[in-house]
Image (cartoon, rainbow, N blue to C red; front, side):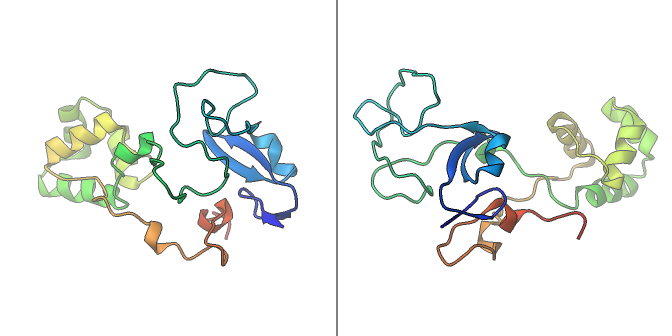
Length: 179
């Protein structure tokens, strides 16, 4: 029996689906949340997975047909992810912006005028109701001389979920708002 990577329920025949760009092994009930992915037989010109259309790919060096975690051995490279290069916003960005603005002796309206943004946006950012866009984050960092990025620490080592096989489901990571 295998665990569904979305809901965590046990399933004897998981389906491989693509959900928001991620390929997951899910139960029959969770299959509707994504697009089913079919596996090709391993050959020298095929990629690891393909969708139902037959695209001619520009070569993947790993011809293994094992489905699973990214910790496969050999010379396979880790797939480049667009989120790897993005700076993560610090959790206390709202307090940092407020304290820096107050120490500079500015009101929210003054800061908004300097940044050419609306004062309501500054209020929402300082309350933590909204995340600043990348552009607004750069403006805030420049105007207040602060760093709003998280500092590059990865939380992966802090995970305590998962079963004895070392695999995680979304249920191990997600924090529910109602609990």
